[in-house]
View (tube, rainbow over the protein chains, first blue to last red):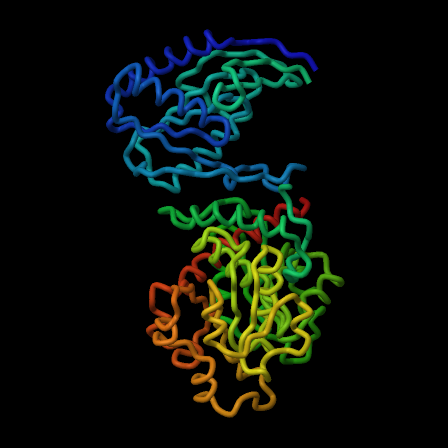
Length: 179
Length: 309
């Protein structure tokens, strides 16, 4: 198994700042916008972006929730591994809000497809956008594209893109792992 | 550790502590789901479940059906009173006929102890025991322990007394197994005639004095006197039972602590507990009912995930 660094901590930080600025361009004061981190790995990116928006760009009203999509996945009973759920925490109303889904890697698009169904349990959003740190091209199973992307990657199927966060893994970085 | 050790839920006796922990963890998520504006998830959209009730039930049947529908399963209902069972059809024939309609899972209540176990040896579908005679009622025990965990933080180390008709109660037996697995200390309390001989071999103590039992415990699980299962008279009169083993506000106020009151339903108000106790803040009877749906969703979800395509 070999791995190569795609993004180091400095590059991740630059990208996060750019993504935060792009969000501000479209959502200004975030009064009608809510951020939704997709469990499990999208939550780190979502928390980081919220922190940046609040601390660096002085936007106070950033609402952040976490959405678990386990019970909405289309591969229930089709995997060897049993799907284990994570916590959903959405303490605000989604009805008529602009929702931004946040996930670390966009690959087949099936997680986002499940998230699009799951979020409807909390109301009817005005619109839904997608932000991802890594966009793996050429392997989409569904017509789903991000509105905001950190970096586009052309990795082959045998390769895995691994995103590490200081809070969870000790450092900010993105690797391509050859399995 | 992310799948159950069993393919059927026939009784608490056949599962492990790890299984219960997994069911509780999954039920936590489903409890959040059933408090959403839209309380339904699509996980089991390609699963069909048959609810076979060979014995009367209100709560359990509704709870299972709701859990199944919240998971988007297709549901068919069967009750023995309005079926060919009355015409002499055997259990295996009845169930096989239903299964030939491509049913994946069977939830069964039956008056005979061991009916679920018997069936699991003869058919392929996944079976959930919703009560078999005076034997086991595993989902009730799971929701009871889940409700204790919710109210008191954990089950381990807690003192639980089960009061009433222990002899005829599947709830008592399943509860004893579940509470012991989870590390609680259990006593049973009731008229000597309604306490099975050798019950101590399950690791529980017998206390005949209700006041002592309540003073000792953190949680009292009050059972109904099951007149329909009694072929002989086990106590002189209902009035005397109530005087000896009924719980009222006066007894609870005479204790030097506030205990949690549970009841699996249906309640005979004024017999095993008075209305003011059943409706008080100490009683978690309606929490038990709500948790029943979440627990059953978890059990069905986890067992369904083991059904191969």
